[in-house]
Image 1 (cartoon, rainbow, N blue to C red):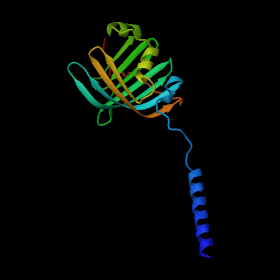
Image 2 (image 1 turned 180 degrees about the horizontal axis):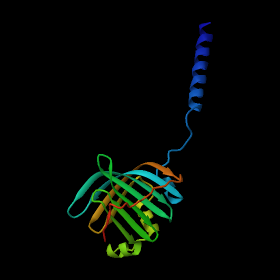
Image 3 (image 1 turned 90 degrees about the vertical axis):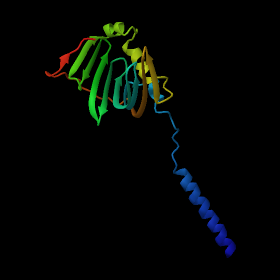
Length: 175
């Protein structure tokens, strides 16, 4: 009788283990940036570290939204979650809204590219922001500027909107 109970116990244990094993997820772990090569829409939270010749800004929080070959929207917060800068880059223009100084910049992309001495297009800028697609960390170096971007909460192919409105209280600033 003891022999039957021990066999029954072992069978029950094996049955429970097999049931538990069959309930585990069979999904493969994929890098959050794995869809970087074939996306239509991309939305992500980001943390920025920016270094320039005279300044260093660390742990800026922001949101990046992109539609492939169409638009890049960026919003960055500096202090206590208050939005500091909002930017929109399209194939032909750049609009930057500086909420802290109540100024905005609206220039053709070609002119901005020329003034920065960088041959940038919208597509190249999107590629730079996504990096190599294998990591959620991107490091950009443009002249004396360095930006380190860490992405989190990445969503692929979920359409989104991101308005950029310049009110009457903002002054235009030239680049």
